[in-house]
Amino acid sequence: MKVLVVGAGGREHALVWKLAQSPHVTKIWCAPGNAGIAQERVGQSLTECVGIGAEDLPALLEFARQNKPDLTVVGPDNPLAIGIVDLFQGAGLRIWGPNRKAAQFEASKAFSQAFMEKYGIPTAKSGTFSEAAAAKDFADKLHGCCAVKADGLALGKGVIICASMSEARTAIDEMLVGNKFGAAGSRVVIQELLQGMEISLHAICDGKAAKIFPTSQDHKRIGEGDTGLNTGGMGAYSPTPFLNEKELAAVGRMILSPWLKGCAAEGIDYRGILYPGVMLTESGPKVLEFNARFGDPETQVYLPRMETDLYEVLDASVNGTLNRLELRWRPEVAVCVVMASAGYPADYAKGKPITGLDEAARLPDVKVFHAGTAVADGQIVTNGGRVLGVTAWAKDLATARMKALDAVSRIQFDGAQFRRDIAAKGI
Ligand code: AMP
Ligand code: GLY
Image 1 (cartoon, rainbow, N blue to C red):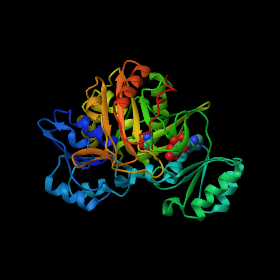
Image 2: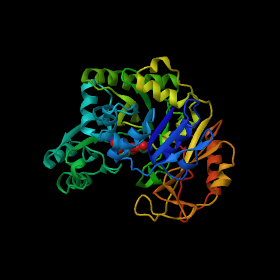
Image 3: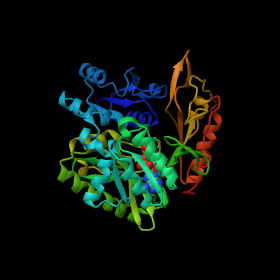
Image 4: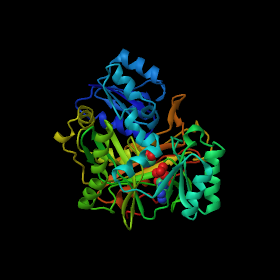
């Protein structure tokens, strides 16, 4: 089978790496890919990176028409939100990921919130507003302790956590009056602030059924001890110790049973990953948001642990045959430490030479996933905010983290930042 993977980050590197291990897969293209993806071997040949952006749907369609992949696998949220799946299906091409209607779970927080309330999925108390005055009245009832969320996709920056009414007023005005996030912020969802342990859940769905993955946890802040600015994610681990198998199954049922019922009632044919961000509160689990794709860096810890052939998983998700597939996981736990550019998540420079990658790659039980990397003058250089996701696996989290940090210590680029405390809550 020939596979086209769409995207360029650590998540897509993990997808390519895992797909390349499948005996079904004979050829992989990645659009646009990165320097690490281009080094992944599929049998005798290398993955072919093609210079088409993940959001350039006409060029992706043209490429697929000419090269005829048996399956296209979509990594990021934006192409899903703008309808890559509908476009490919309309052209008779097989593609994995939710269609535009289904991708609304991520593309519109107002849609998700209304859906959760209608179908009884546990979530935060909330209101949806397009008028600043009404939004402020609602925030006032929460004494300003709230999360103000832009309705649409905002590059992961559309959530402002407020601890006072003056912060809430500023956040509401920025979005609804100042148009800070453009159309994405012309409606806001305001949620009560929830306290508890935040985890990531993933479920693979096939339009009828959903199978839950083990738990994982991301680390959104740039600084150790969860301090500083929010990022795309500075590291992850799986599984977490916060839910045992029975509890995970129960939480899965609480969220996924009403969600599947709601999808059936609303005519939503969801084939892809549903990734709920969940707060484990004193009064039970509550969904903060839904994503309609694999998490990044969660994918970098899930796929090294996945025993089942990923091609078979995605194929069953497209075909609607997940009930015949068993998801199996290795007993080892995995920790991913992200290495980011100096200055990230604010402005950062690109083009810094990266050394030590070969040495790190020789370590056992380690895989270095590339996120923002490119090749310049024959040398691998930085090309993004998050540069590498250094993943290691072992029998316990402390050992896995030690191995990941050992690998990190072999890799150098100017100003590299990373957190030494990934998985601390789980250890
Ligand atoms: P989201 O993109 O909706 O997941 O929000 C980004 C981050 O903000 C989440 O990962 C949480 O850490 C935090 N957050 C979002 N909503 C809430 C909430 N209602 N209560 C507490 N923290 C929240
Ligand atoms: N792990 C954060 C995200 O993928 O949105």
